[in-house]
Structure formats: structure tokens, C-alpha cells
Amino acid sequence: MPGCSTALTPDFLDRYLPYLLRKADQTLSAPFYAVLARAGVARSEWRLLSVLQDLGDLRVADLAVAALSPQPTVTHALRRLEDRGLVTKTVDGDDRRQRVVALTPAGSTLTRALIADATLLEGEALAGADGLEELAQRLRGLTSFLESLAATAVDDEVWVG
Image (spheres, rainbow, N blue to C red):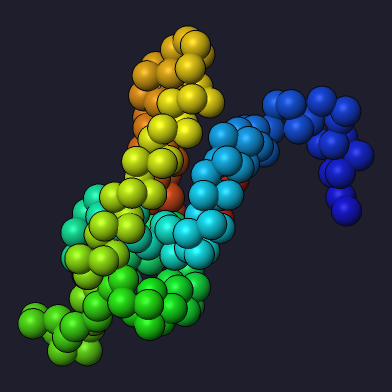
């Protein structure tokens, strides 16, 4: 591939922010993924449950955006969650073509318990780490910056920085 020989220096991954963020995510999340597995909840399902608990009832398309998941993935996960009685889908009163997803009482109970586990495990993993609030603030700022760049992209052009 053109440019690969210069881009892939030995310390590339130590400087490549997407890799570092993903590695931190995987390392921090691994104990919680075990909790999800014991609860019989897939990661894709967890993202939907936690978003619904946090944001409330959402249209399927809005849920996909908020959960950072492709809509086909969301559709399949919702089917499984609905079959288990954890969510319901109803016709949107404003647009009958749309479906609104809501947690059932059982879904909310499960999600609140999982959020408690996630919070506890995160706290244990990060105990003693300095500068976490500053890091979170910087990540929120970076996310806002990147989202504003994406919003200014026109005609499906790819922004290259």
C-alpha cells in the first residue's frame, strides 16, 4: 500500500489515538464484559439498554445513533431484547412508519443492576488514577470537535487532516 512504509513506524501504535482509546476501552471493559456474559446480555444489547435507561424512549434510528451502532445491528439486538421481554416497540404517534423503543420494567431493573456493576468495576479499576475528570473533559471536547468537523463535511467527502 502506498505510504505504509513511512506510516507504520515501530512506535506508531503508541501514538495512534484511535488505537490507544480502543485499547483502554478493552482493558477497562473486560471485567464488565464477563458480567454481561453471566447475565446473558450481548455487548450490542448492553449499549441499547444503557442508552434507553439514560435517554428514555427513542425511535429506532435515534437509538442506533445514540448507541453508536449500525441500524441492522440495532434491529437484530432489539428483536432479541423484545423476545426476552426487556424492551417494547410501539408505533410512533407522530409518524406511523417509525417505531419507538422503551425499556420494560424488567429491562429497566436489569439495566440499573448492570449500570451499578459497571460503575463499581470502573471505580475499582481506576482507583488511585489521577486526572480522570480532566481526561473525561478533554475527551468530551475532542468528541465535540470531531463531531463539528463531521457536520461540516459535504457531499460524502471524507475529511482528511
